[in-house]
Amino acid sequence: QVQLVESGGGLVQAGGSLRLSCAASGRTFSTYNMGWFRQAPGKEREFVTGITWSGVITYLSDSVKGRFSISRDNAKNTVYLQMNSLKPEDTAVYYCAAQRPGRSFYDYWGQGTQVTVSS
Image (cartoon, rainbow, N blue to C red):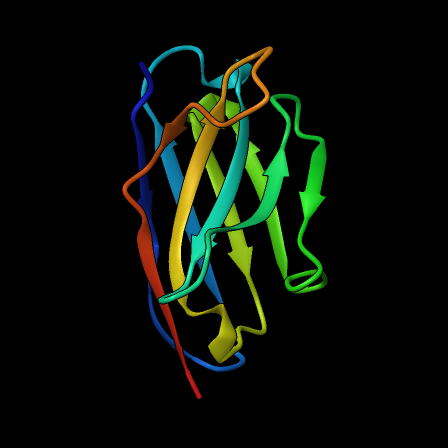
């Protein structure tokens, strides 16, 4: 079992930046692919970006290209989402998720952190 805890969300003005962190428990974090998702009110959950256990970026949504970046530090059991040039449409609850080796879906999810971008 892996527990994921997101932090770093908050209220920011349009054009600003935030860095989200997702801390994982356990000793197997370095074997998991990780992803960031978001869900805005009234909308479906959206896959924002993903990174393999070795640090290869597997996906980046067109809606955030050039503005968001994912990274990880396996020594700290943490994955990050750097968000720059934030827009009001980035307002959502952001979730990190972990995918065990060999799985085609994400097994573990954090509780989410709210990001609100004011215009």
